[in-house]
Length: 511
Image 1 (cartoon, rainbow, N blue to C red):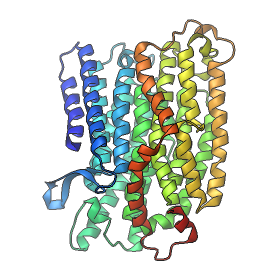
Image 2 (cartoon, one colour; image 1 turned 180 degrees about the horizontal axis):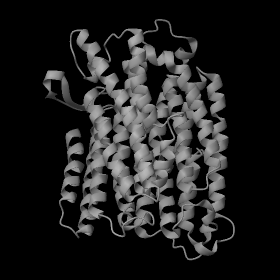
Image 3 (cartoon, rainbow, N blue to C red; image 1 turned 30 degrees about the vertical axis):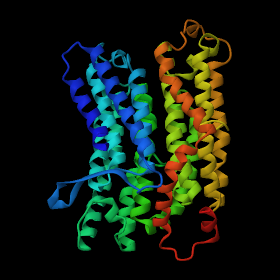
Image 4 (cartoon, rainbow, N blue to C red; image 1 turned 180 degrees about the vertical axis):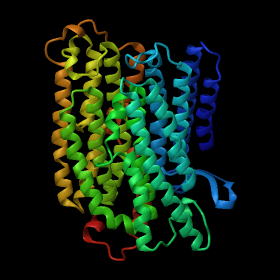
């Protein structure tokens, strides 16, 4: 099943790339069809997943490079499953939303006609790699997918982005390559440690039981953590995101912030905590401090933005602070909330980027002061934008509230001061979301906005499922939490097994 989910979009990308020149409509139709097949297969897999079964299900394992102990090994637990589902749901919506994006000019120096089939082939290849990175249970295979994701994103931003696309694409690539090199050194170091223990391997299930000297574990932890912190992005490794998301086409920005960034927090939860539990505890005060700084710093910078897409990007930096806070609180509520936050953030921020893209395509400007009174001429656009924005500020009844509440409760049981400071982010979120909505949607209708059309049928088909999910998960998150919780408990067992006498706060966090 997992191999099919990886192979189908990869083969679809090859098929789209090989289509005859001029068959743009067919390229779009093939891309949409392939992503819908992947979505259906993912739903089938989710239905078949047993929450009371083995931790990793749908497993496959074959030798890849036998001399170095490298396997093609894939499998999913609850955390990986919900993130694969997030990818599989968002990609077909992005394809449909990006139906005309490849033809649009990104700036005065952009060629008037760009390759449509290349754009959609890159989206399909990106989907294959996103699914692969969440499914990989061999560390080396994970690293290959982790680095390979850079290629389609770099070309999408660099070829189809805004006026500063070249700068944004290069900055994104350099930051990511630096993190990837650090992780590669740590991956090699991990293999050497396992080889010295008598059996060189990259398999996650074997490495999580490997005894590593404390000093070595701290260095290996840093190699993985910095790579994931850059990808997440966590302050102070965040500066590439506003440029990349601001210059990327709206659909690509959805995947960049909605899914790709989750690879960083997923990696922290999966690899940093389980492979190096002692080192993770040792570095926890530093990570919690960076998380709290990110929550407040990202929110403050979001308030001062004049560009819609950059504002949304900075809100994501603040939200990722909450996610890392929940992960390193190392409580059941905190980690369950952090994982659920990854999913909810993907949908709420994805909706904001898509709607912002629809607005920019109509107005021709990403500046907030270029709008005003949009709700009078495009009420559907304004209404869906409001729901997505309210989810971003964690309004009760919408999906992000549940995850943010769990993160704060789970953190407060062990680390009261960071949890209290993090609540400032909730207040600031209300400021930047409501202020952005007020300046774009309320007030007198700007002259250039008076002729703006409301959402088309295609755009409604794109946005409606995301809004429905945001509302549904806000009222009833239990099905997703039921999938997540067994994996979170396994992670916490691995982290806390070194402590024969847990503290009172830790005992309470498991109840």
